Structure formats: C-alpha cells, structure tokens
Length: 70
Image 1 (cartoon, rainbow, N blue to C red):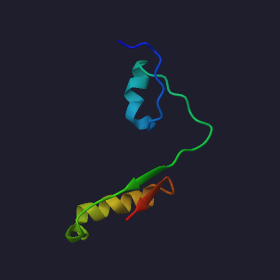
Image 2 (cartoon, one colour):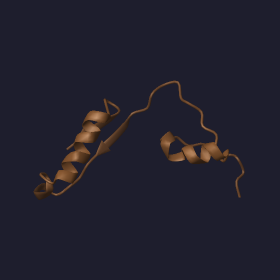
Image 3 (cartoon, helix red, strand yellow):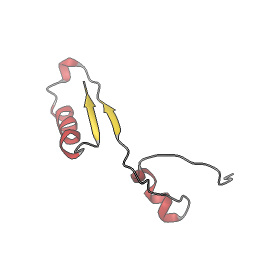
C-alpha cells in the first residue's frame, strides 16, 4: 500500500511509463548528477565485438555523463 512518503533519485528513463500513468511524480534537479560506471569482463574477452561495441557506445554517447574505469 502506497503512503506517498517515498523519495528517491533514479534515472528518469526507468520510470517514464509510471510517470505517464500518474503513478509517480518526477521533479527535475537544478544540478546535473553524474553516474560512475565500471565494466568488468574477462581479459580474454577484450576483443569480443559485443563487449567492444558496448564500451565504445558509452564512451561516445555518454559525453561526460559516465566515467569509464578499468
């Protein structure tokens, strides 16, 4: 049962459907938040095309929003 007392900071894309249905209310923050992301994979998989594409996507599309470590 919802009591309407919860507050959370999450990525908006995750709750867009709930926001559209009126289940949740989102409030934009005045400052940008940054998400630190780490990718872990076996060394022998470093040349795996799927892994390379995934890591490259975040490196290019993240545009400073994510910091890739490792």
